[in-house]
Image 1: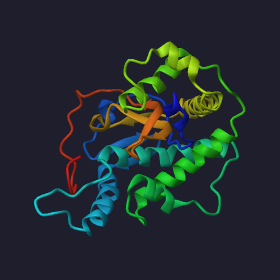
Image 2 (image 1 turned 90 degrees about the horizontal axis):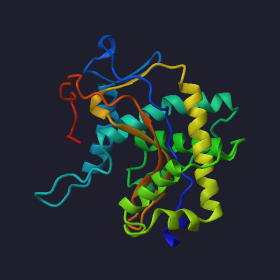
Image 3 (image 1 turned 90 degrees about the vertical axis):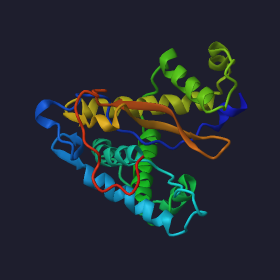
Image 4 (image 1 turned 30 degrees about the vertical axis):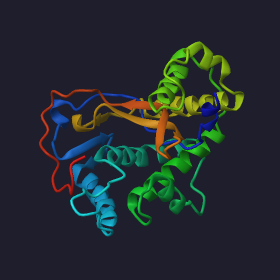
Length: 249
């Protein structure tokens, strides 16, 4: 269970699922509708291409592709988070500090510093961390909550696949249990705020799940332990190729 102690306190959260794209709100040029806010595919492309261009500044070995550290899904996810989290934070009198360690986040994510993606990720996680620290409730964790953590650790190779779930659950350290409880509390707060919003996610980015609690693997990869699903998985809505992307992801 040593690997379970590597639970990190970083999180990126957005709303729980509402509706998929409806007939009147299904434009191939739109990545997401968040109430009155629209996140366009062009916006996703701009943020993605900025990282691509920064990474491309150091050419890869001949014949190899540019090693992109993110995908368009990652970009769409952080753009959604950047819209939702400030709303939740405002309701809890939480605000960003004067200084956010963007470069530290960029380094941890292998993202070029100075990019908008790094800034959005850092600000979103900082708000989420503050919300967790200020959570007034510690909900009783269900087996569903803990199994999500268990599955994430097994999938990422942090615990052996043959580890019984009951053994994992009983051996989870108290501080890690509290970290998961805080994440679930914030997830519930976000669900309450977004329940009155109409949120629609383009099928291209479905199924979308926003990380609520992240950890770092032995390979230094950032993975989600607890996530909040967003939008309906409606692949029946036709969507054309994203415009102007530097590379498919």
